[in-house]
Length: 494
Image (cartoon, rainbow, N blue to C red; front, top):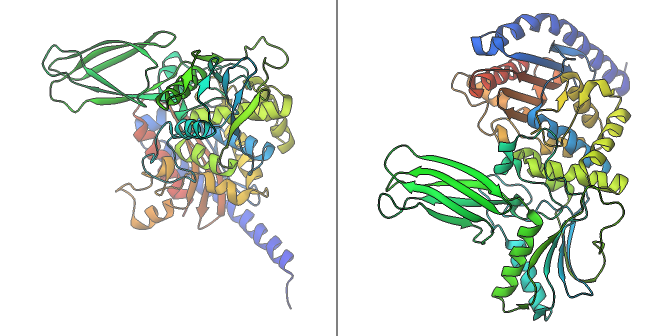
């Protein structure tokens, strides 16, 4: 007798569910042993929820409905929102317009890709030049015959409300790349690199080299060339002002620090102003920024689409942008797509509009509001909370959606790429266990005292699993907690 395919699948799923139900009982002692293997792991607050993707049957769990700070696991939520609301083919647009008053306006449309990064995603260092998009823009304008700008060069990020830092970001975050300010007009991920090298003789100030080489910050350089252990502290003293304090040993190779901008639109205007000036364009005005304050109602003046269109750039499709966002865990990009969803849904590019749309999406999936309290799009906020169970529900929904293959492709792969490239390669694992590490596709998360991992595992016993593993309140180095998480994943893959 030939059994119809649908009945075969039904029987197979039933058998898998039975295995999983038994597996939870069998796996509980192993779960306890892994999470209690060291004093550091045992004292952390753990949340674990692991289910079969197809059936939803629980394989392992601990505190599945408790709240945890997810760190960059939260990018799963913003990425899913963008994919479901904007679509994989969505592109961001940046334009240059000539206004009636003579201003040349660089208008941001939320594109995160104007940097040295490669698209589609490629492992390794960024291959391009940080301001390549601005250089190409300047070439195009000169080729069109632009010789003079009667007014200012304006960096216009008024597409979105100016809320550069989400609720719950720490002050120290905003100094560095991980906490770069959010803007609809973004160049080079809104950062500058400063290389600090020793002076010629002891007592000399350290030498500073910027990349890109653009005079944007006013620097109070108090780093001295002195023997001893290298020290460096960075302070933001005001708009466009940095103070560097510390010492660097004579003859040492130096140190490179990535510093966040404070006004991306102003920086973009300065970059375009400088590029045009180098090409002989006479500019009567100066580089300035135009923002939309949170208190402003209605369109900005002039609106982003007014004026004569001189140039336009399209971003790569969202499908490629999401791969970079999640593989490298790019905070700024996550916040940008959250705001763009808000702009498309409510005509307001603000965190609140984006989060309101996220709440609607989660309700459509069947996730109740008491399963989360989300305050940002990237997970850098210490105020965002989710439960492991909520994250697994999201993972199951995306896996069952028409976007499943794309969704799986954006996640880092254990031992292969992204933030998981160097994990699941421990010498303590057998060759077979390391090979199974490649079957982990998951989003990492890390903040002080916090480590998380959420995604999918290929299990030899249970089939494909959706999992969320969260450790909060750990007092030991992250390497110890990550080792426990990875060991748990390996055990689940058996």
